[in-house]
Length: 200
Image (cartoon, rainbow, N blue to C red):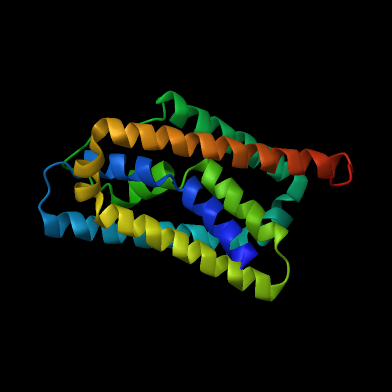
């Protein structure tokens, strides 16, 4: 249960639920409810496929490229930290609505929701967990986190009305603060392993 909650919390916050809502509302514009729900479904499926592909096949990617886990932890943690700073400062890149484009997968699912920091973090999780039973527990936690993000997307309009634009920005900054702590922990773990420093 501890591993499940730990992975779920990390993945849920790195997927930035309130940023996802804000971007989904911006890109969906004045779509009718049926079209908006269809876009939310396609975005959710894309997020799930990307996360699982990275999680289960990250090990192969590491072996092919000859990258060590500690080195990638430092790199992924740095990317996640920069993403978090962008969210806290309100400068995370945004793309305006384009009514002639299909935004559900690109750019909403990737790289907006599943950005470099998210991909790096999930890659590290997949590499750190070796036991099959723990790997399946973590996979279930990732699935639940993606389903929660999906629920947020389907309820984007009522949530947006409830919180308002200022409320969404405030929640996005709070998420950014939590991500800075997660990123710092990932970087610290990577540096500690590289330098062979025993855990506290």
